[in-house]
Image 1 (cartoon, one colour):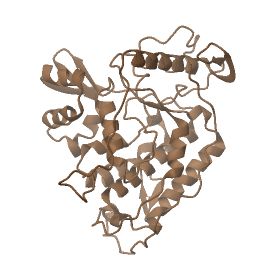
Image 2 (cartoon, one colour; image 1 turned 120 degrees about the vertical axis):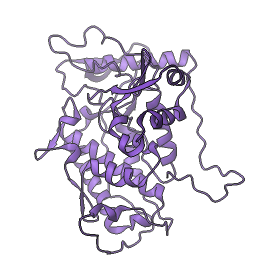
Image 3 (tube, one colour; image 1 turned 180 degrees about the vertical axis):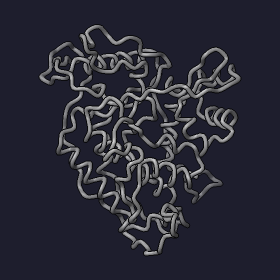
Image 4 (tube, one colour; image 1 turned 90 degrees about the vertical axis):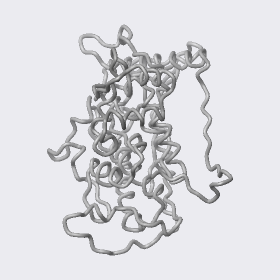
Length: 374
């Protein structure tokens, strides 16, 4: 079966291609976020996120596509009087961050990298970059900061319980860009949601819990941001934590209700149109067979492998041939990875594998156009 190895993630100073000097224009009093409104793209500069790309490839594990079936009861031996590990019915969906393997050095490097990203705004005229470049910057900054803060506080069962100096993590202004203090919520709602009309952007923000969109195993860039957002939307919409059916009712994630004011003002009509864009056969049938929508699906447990707790008992890991490995992991984590392995075997057996991605294709009548997220 598969297993996770702890490995150092070395984060170095961010490399910025073709630096441009940021203008020193004054902000309008009372509206500090107005400075982040995208302007006309006047240059083709890009930001290098290779460091973050290397990091997420090491610390993020995909649980694979949803089979639209609950994970059921945890296997016997998951815990004794105290239950360790994940018990969520959605534990085999989405992706997981290996927080239990991130030591103080790695967390410190993540904090330094987040600060490096913040300083990009002092060296680059962000607003003159392409809209895709700007969007990639905000998505990466948000997700780096989220991983850093959860990693610093781990073990924690639910990320939404975290605070910084008594302020909830989502609202704490611990990020500074171009002299403006920002919270994670500010990045989402006052910058991205305020200036990007495409609701696919909601799938780019990782909130740290099982019930939300997955964190991708690639850094966002100006070139791939559209593709990764589409991937995240397809995965989430067609997962049980995104959509379910109860009688004649379409049940959806509470996340959609949280973002309704920005993208789904006519909640029933707008959300159904959005879901239909990404719905595969199972979800398309739910949309056709239901007449009302209710936002009730939620799961706030941490999206890690260990369930937000340090388990005192460990197991040796076996490979696919049953040979013991020297690497030890907590029993509950081993059980979760075994379930994941079994899920992938089923996917292979049922022929559900294969993803075809088209990138950088110019159609005959679209020469020179960029596939930008509006």
